[in-house]
Every structure is written in C-alpha cells, then in structure tokens.
Length: 142
Image 1 (cartoon, one colour):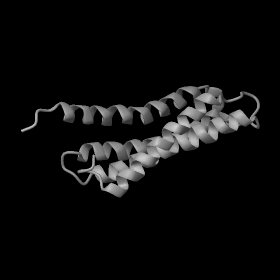
Image 2 (spheres, rainbow, N blue to C red; image 1 turned 30 degrees about the vertical axis):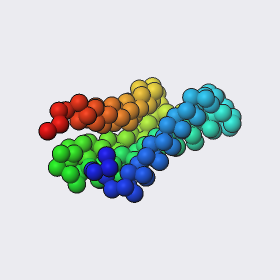
Image 3 (cartoon, one colour; image 1 turned 90 degrees about the vertical axis):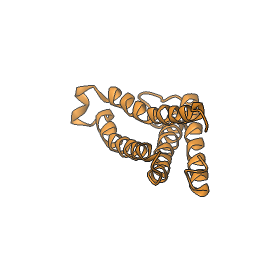
C-alpha cells in the first residue's frame, strides 16, 4: 500500500487497525454482564470492544478511503471504504436506540439483529480490501 497511501496516513491506518484488533480481543476476554451495567467486565467489554474495537476501525476506514480515492485503480475501493465508515456510523445510534430497554422501539426485539448487521458491515471491509490486495498479488507482472 506504500505507493498508494501516504506514509504518515498509512502509519495512522495501521495503528488504528491494530487498536481495533486489540479492542476486539478485550471484548472477547471480558464478556458483558447482562443485568449489571456497572460490572467491571461489562465496562471493559463496551469500552474496549466497542469504542476501541469498532470506532478505531471506522476511523481507519475514513483514512484509507480518502487516500484510495486519489488513485484511479483504487478509487472504487476508496469510495467503498468511506461509505462503509459512514454506514457503520449511521448504524451506531440506531443500534443503541433498539438495544436500550427504555426505548419504545425495544419491543420490536431486533436490536441483536442490528448489532450483527453492524458487525458484518465493519468486518466485510477487511474481506473486501483483503481480496483486492490478494488479487493484485496474484496478477501476472509485466
């Protein structure tokens, strides 16, 4: 990615994606405690898993997307990165609205579905960009 993304921006993206992985690990190690929002494990789960895990990934999508849009061969992937970031950001308040027990929409009982849709949107970015890098590496060189 060095020829496509400026060195400083690439470093920022790598740090953000590394923080995201670390946050995901935290959320797996410290499970949420249903019914006890003050439990330390639940707080670490949400702060580490959500804030660090997902928000740092979304920030990386913005950084990468902006850089990729500058290059003709990567422009579509740049737009994909940026739109993925905006889409994930749009799902966050809706997700909390549907997961909150005080919400009038919580009776619809689709908060968990939306939570998984949010995860798919975010994790699909890794698959799409990874596949693009894989196919470039497999292409014959002239």
